[in-house]
Image (cartoon, rainbow, N blue to C red; front, side):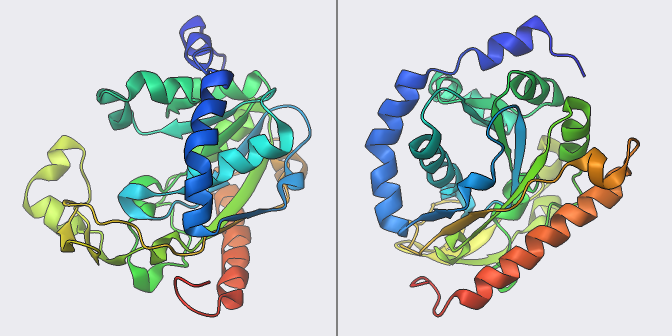
Length: 268
């Protein structure tokens, strides 16, 4: 899929100086609060586009981006940007301009293609909010809700998929249910709102999306796995479902291993 001028203008909004300013201000607090570790960044290809595919955790206050991106820039500096694909709803509020300057771009295959063809790293969370609100009892399960668009994006751009897993953010509060049934009952699915999550945390106790509780200081560990060359492994005409199943299996094995290393919830 070829990038258009509008897609290229979208990625051109990334502002490295502004990104560094925000990271230098916010990232130390996030890193300290979650005692964050990012392991094996050297698995990222040294040059060229790469699609980093990760699970998403922590509900409304998911710390994933503010843990991965600062670690990436610490390791590689600001010559090669990280673009994060975000839901269109993020850009409807007053943060729109700031998010784009930070490298958050609206999730579309066109925007992703433009970013990947520019040689950037693109971070995608296929499971989105469905994944970030997964119940605590299934905290260590990789679940993209059947979304496989990321595979097509990597194939069309000719870039490797870099599986990445994160553990700990789902311990920042007690996630009880995604509330799919509640969203349907209230007719929210007509407004493209498929979940209405119910959680329990500090300081408000029970929360049905709002009011949002403050995340507990759970230790978060993120691990970058070995890149997957889709064509080399699956041939010139890869089956999207087969690739997706393989990616998720690699991620699940890594997440199970990290879960086995954790001694206590929150403390890590």
